[in-house]
Length: 174
Image (cartoon, rainbow, N blue to C red; front, side, top):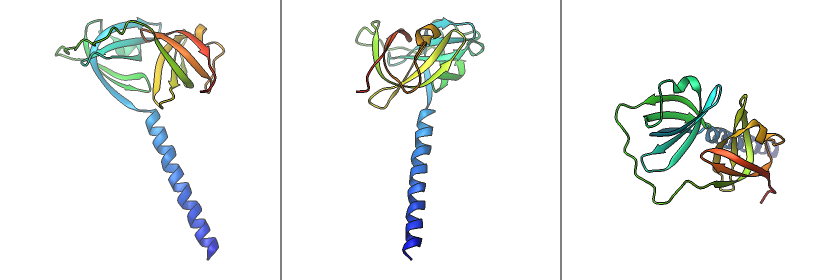
């Protein structure tokens, strides 16, 4: 009788842990629907980094294959489905999006600390995902030259300017 109860307890714990793993996998592939005005397109040979100003004045950066950007130019109002930092689809909107200017100047660098959880390599540039201490993921683009020697699982501090990593240094886990 005790053995049967023990088996049921183990099966229950396995079920609970598998639900937790499924939830974590779903969170890592979070879908963002982004609408805004194209502020920048930094083109690479096959992929580009797109900077969008959303209606609330916040910036949102994502990567895209160049074929999805056909006909999109600076100042266009777009809607994009972004998964894991990469555009699955981009559509130009017929109506212009009205942007509220942010209250503070956001032109300065942004410092991001955390653990590298993914590196999506391109021919010249790559997209890296950094898990910050608050649990949020931060995606940024970096040249392959700048990323040399860095691996998934390492802790880093990144200086990000206009969506691109300007410098990356190894850091200790805090």
